[in-house]
Image (cartoon, rainbow, N blue to C red; front, top):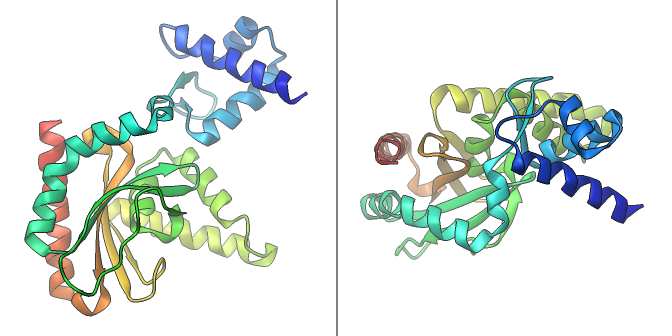
Length: 245
C-alpha cells in the first residue's frame, strides 16, 4: 500500500512538472487517472509540506520553489552567496552572531552563520533545527506565507499541546505572526535558549519565501536602544538585498 501511495504522489508531481501552468483538481485527477478524493488527499499532503501551492482555497495547483530545495547543498550555497553581503554587514556593525535559516516543515534549519567574536555567545551549528514557532527566523518566514498555509503550520506546531491548551496556543501564535507581519520583523526573547534574544527578517522580497536572516544577541547586550538599531539595520539591509535581487 505504501508503494502505491508513493507512485501516485510522484504521478501528481510529474504532471505538475510537465504542465505549462497551474492545474485544477479535476485536471490532475484525470491526468493521473486517480479518483478525485485520492488526488485531493495527495495534493493536500504535498501542499502541507510546501511542495505544492494554491493561490487561494479551491484554486488550481502548481509546484512550489521548494521542490528545488531537495538538492539542499546547492540551494544553501546559492542563497548563502546572495545574502552573504547582508550577513557580513550586520556582523561588522554589531559583532553579534548572524544566522541564515530555512523553513522545512514545521522547523527552521540553520544553514549558515557568522559567529560573534565576543566571549559570551550562543551558537547553533549548521544543520540543527528548532520549531519555527519558538524562533525569530521561523516566525519571520511563516508570517509572510499565504494565510491558509500559515494556519496549517500553526495547527501543526500546537498539535503536541494538551487538548485543552491548543485553541489558546493557536490563537496566541496567530497573533504573534500577525504582529510580525505588520511590523516587518520577528522578535524572540529567551524562547529558544535562556539568556538569548533574536531579531529576524524574511527574505521573501528577495525571492526566497522560505528563508530568513537573524541576529542573535545575549539579553544583557539587548537594551531597547540596541534593539532599535538592530531592527533598523535588518529592515534596511533586507530592502537593499531585495532591490539587487
